Image 1 (tube, rainbow, N blue to C red):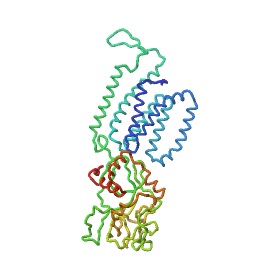
Image 2 (cartoon, one colour):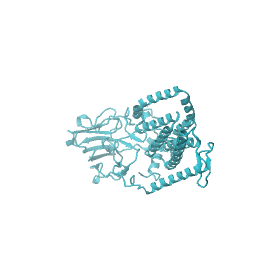
Image 3 (cartoon, helix red, strand yellow):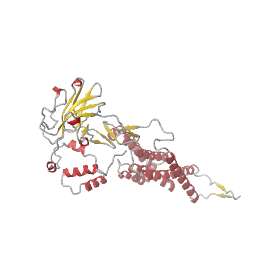
Image 4 (tube, rainbow, N blue to C red):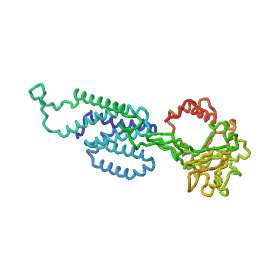
Length: 460
């Protein structure tokens, strides 16, 4: 390849590289600041190529950096996850290629890495603007591949005698002018027509391809996700989402008329809490301490090891509801117990297994300190148990007088609960929702009413 490729190859290759990063920027998990990478690379690329041609030490240094990076790949997978680690590897390969002198195969590597970035974005639920980015990618790819072939052929014939041209309608031989631009008006028109044909062909395939499954006749190994109670919630990837209509639990309220509550929609059934978000996935993380604004009062309603029930450890700071009129007794049966927690009405003060199950199973507070009941068994996942919960709520005046201090939360837990930054648009929406509120309670109530109103509806 020539040291200074033509403008068509440089421009189309630059657009193709930029399109790969634009596709990543369309994914909500990444910000537009990722576009600084291709901008810096395009600026430094001529400098890197010049250093690569003139100084052997430059290639030695970059090779050493590459070997070090490859040794750190397993660590990057553990720290940022497999998907982001693969994306980081693709970015590094592209950076290395951009900063070195490029042969024909190096340009193909560059284009392939851009395609991998586009592919990585498409599997992470990008914004609708990805459609225009794919159009830019397609057009720049057509121009880049055609320009690369012209440059490669020109490099192979460099130094040879100019070709003779014989026009069909003439008998005289015309010698090719070596100073004539390769991309003249005719060639630009031809490549433009190929680009338009590529776009139309892609649109036609998209229209005729069934939307229910990929491919012409479908595929038998599609990923199917079902609604369920799981250890984590992964928002990444694709596949089909289907309702799981199997019952999660059956509940009766023996102390209430007809064993039913008047308004079951007001009951808050709690299983567990996922506080850790890492790039599209929610999962549980242990807290250092258990937090509850109520002073600890472990009463007869809080059971211990002697009664084959939950641990009465000092970190279980649940108030005794012995004299409360809001106690509600539940008899619960789960045909297939969730692995991460036992379903129970919130603010439980008592949980007990049925007598016939106490010899082979046990329930206790989770060691993660997040008010989750752990179920331990070596037999069937079926479980029948009773629970007593306190449904009383503090008076609104008490809640409005509550402060905004989080001094009672340890530094480690505060960092865990606040480590995910909100997007600027989200912060602006929160400010709009909380307009006119003065207390923390009113702020939380305004946000709750906003989500419970007509602004949101469940969708897949």
